Amino acid sequence: MTRAAGAFAALAALTLATPAAPAAAHTALSGSTPADGAEVDTVDEVVLTFNEQLRSGQLVVQDEAEKNVHKGKVTVSGTEVKRKVRAELPAGKYTVGYRVISADGHPVTGSLTFTVTGLAAAPSATDEAAAVTPSPSATAESTEGGGTRWLMVGVGLAAGAGAGLLISMRRRRDA
Image (tube, rainbow, N blue to C red; front, side):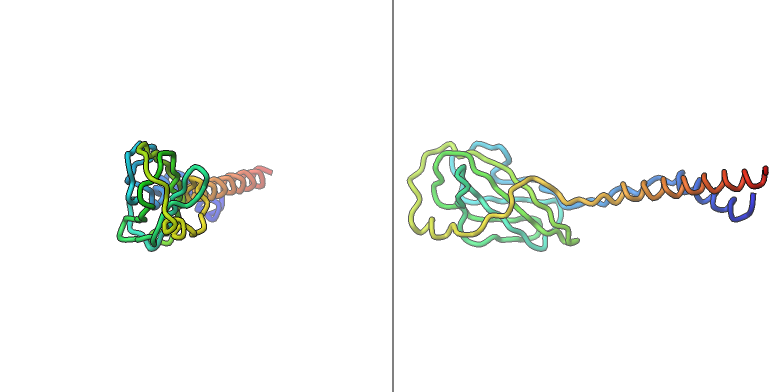
């Protein structure tokens, strides 16, 4: 076996023996008010709390007919995203859709629901006028990277190439 083939085999073996680095943690929703799936009498404001600092965020609150029931601007402070909702929401199920940008630049989107059980008066014309913000997609998905998976694919390819090189070198020597 040549020195180059031996060095490559040693490098491949060392690479396979080295544990993969843990996947980098990404920003995730750690809590909300109201909580996902909660039943509440009334709601004044929706607050989402994340496990890391945020650069920016969007948050919409919609009723079952997919009409916006939030008002005012979204507030992002540290790890929290907040938005007021119209006064006295009627009983029903509501969906909160969000998209935030973490401090490291990764976007994270998702949704959660809550149910208002109390009865309230019909919304005023002022509340209707405030609810014109377009809605981002409320699908629950995260844009977490797959860096560890690609690292393992690369290690596997390197090990396969090294094994192929060793077999080829051994056959040439035996011939």
